Image (tube, rainbow, N blue to C red; front, side, top):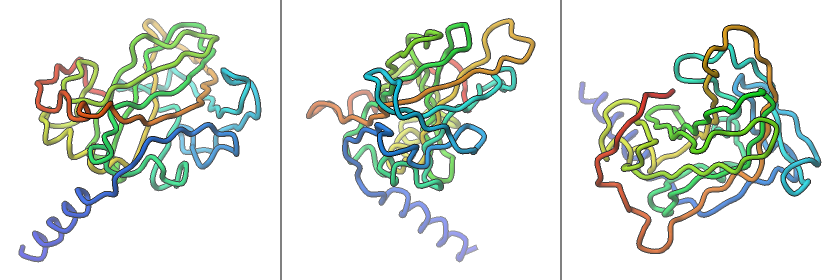
Length: 222
């Protein structure tokens, strides 16, 4: 029992001791940089065609296979060394409050997109839904605000500031997912494109805004 408690204490200490991260943008100009599809297969790297006709990555998946918490489309994960782990670390210490990216799909209907933020072990985690939805056939810039009081944020597990902070202090995985369109009951294979993934700190003095507020969870995502 004592040995187990010691191991848990060390694990908790290592989680909270994650290195601080700074603002960073992945443009994919040099390649896919180990970002993978939702099925953990390699993404397609495209040298031109993004918003500014620059490079981007793509995956292709069937939206009808989405579960009740959505379908993971693209992953930037610690265990894949995505972007050289530039997105891995302590977001609270770095003042990171926003993740944003350019996204495109050709599903033929607008899609609700979510960003799942998790530790390297993939739990604990929380998800933030996009607003507005991603329009089919064109690039949409999506922004996800990472603060506890965000009504579009759902924490997996206890919806407490401590649970939110446990993720923010040890971010390891960024996962982008979509939800099955209403009424879809057959195969819908679509392409999903991603570019300019950025983590951004809040203006000075605002980094902890909302951490003590009571969040209003819309629905649980995984």
